[in-house]
Length: 149
Image (spheres, rainbow, N blue to C red):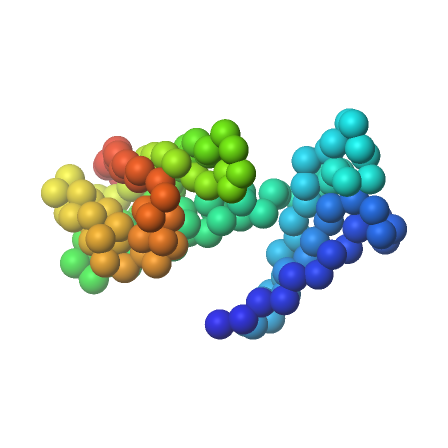
């Protein structure tokens, strides 16, 4: 796996904190920093997600992917899955994630709650590389709701 991240600056200038990532699979991802009122040249323009927001989003995508796949392999009629991640970070550098809650909403027909619980556990214990890595610095908790459709 590979990725190249390049500084783009702000609107083509060499100030600001805009970046573009080009992934090995041929996709791009734009990232930006938060504006800095004290030193505008060192801040972003709030035009894209922050780099750590993309880490959090990637973790949610990784785990939701696992949950859907595990449920489908179990022949469950899963029709939707979303996960809301809420994270806290350390107050001092490096400002790593210290707590993450992942709340899954799974929609389907006659899916037993125990199957959803098992799929989430399997993702976090065995399959989701992202959440397993983040679990080295963060306390990760999960919850879910099951919606019949």
